[in-house]
Length: 183
Image (cartoon, rainbow, N blue to C red; front, side):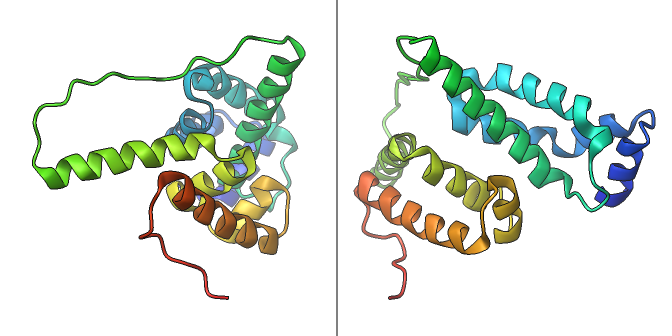
């Protein structure tokens, strides 16, 4: 498997198959990020992300890290779609509300399931900036420097935003078992 640097050079040189390798390596993570960020609109954003990436891949700098770059493209596509939505005064986004009939579960599983639902609902209520940083750090597992590049901010801003996002998520989810930041 080629390194990111090798893939960037191949993309810059418009080598056949290079983009397919990038998609195979990072497509699933970009999809998960957009699905969590945009819900029902993720499929269109996913396609738009890859189309934009394909159009601009030959312009990448040699030191570009592909995954943070792709998260940035995906995030920008999401933000553009939100701006368009506001401009067109749409009535609202479709929510992925699912009424799942639960079979009787032991008390611990019921509690865990309800807590997961509260956490998911709380995540949806977070500000976009807090949701983005949580998804990139906690879910996608990116390092602070990679998240900073993807969000076009400093590492210190990422750390502060992440700390605030965790506290706000815990508050919204009604949880007291989240780790507290040291003063």
